[in-house]
Image (cartoon, rainbow, N blue to C red):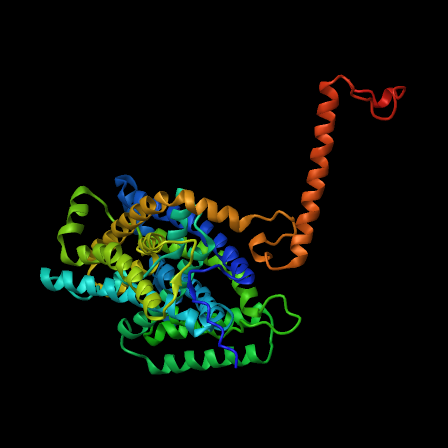
Length: 478
């Protein structure tokens, strides 16, 4: 009887499959552009709210009401941005989660364990840090959920600004973390920040979602069917007392994200490709524009570090997120007997974990919900989210820059395509045809260099011949 073949140890943060790498690259490209717009919107909001001549106009625009009051939708512009536009953001998050569950890393329980445990620890530890800070400081525990969220767009914008060549495995880890993070953020909002329920409106929203699901299963197509239905479901969900963004993630989860035979893309992937630019480029920046406009002064910054609630948010984002995600990743590797990819070190995981401490969009939203009705505390918590995110971004910048030379070498190796077939060479190293193509490329290069060497040798000895014959004036060298 032959001895059993020893199993290959599973690698943590190893190379992505080619299809997963392509998907991640496309998703991150859009999110990076959206992140730059998000940064611009946040800076604009801060300037608009803090320049004395413009402050009143910011408040007037943010608090301007519009919408049909008879339908319970006479909302301020800031409210429309938080409850309406962010529903688009969570719709995309729902599609991403569904795709990860059926076609991405989360479909394999062993592979899913890493980002899920890391994300859970990256939410539990910041909440614990906030609670401990406020218990010892005598503050309110209402904001425990504020530092639990990661803003992938903001994090990617930081990567774009500092110019680091982060390997695709680490970028994918960050993206998957954010997807799982968004799911649990939605659950937190639904469970802990739901007002008194209107069961009639909730029943209507559930019925609308059922119709949405049936139409999808019947293969009905046409935006003119789904967009009006989605608006009705959203309005009913809003009036039910449950946060309206839940409607977005619910509809995103209903889309089919696995491909049928002959399909280049599943319906979910196709719709995500269409809607993601709207989410990243319009919905999230507009939300930031009307949420990040808080008064910033020297006194306000000092208060962030002396008030228990705001200090808890800053420590939760900077310390809790970093050590929660790093610790969750290390524990997962330790107890599943997996080893870190040969190309990476634990310092790389720590650097990415610190980058996940940037909690902007969802943290601002939860801050508004946690201290609803207390404008002073809401503004202070928003300021603490900004300060904590900036500190996390600065820390991540330093840590990632220290490793950037190594990242650049890894990135160049991932991108190398010497046989020019559009597929990176690292994915073809086991294919004999690739090596034959590469041999042909090298033979052509060798022949070209031999020709050049011969011409140089002839020229050096004064024996260069005129191509095409001595009497051919057309080809005579100048």
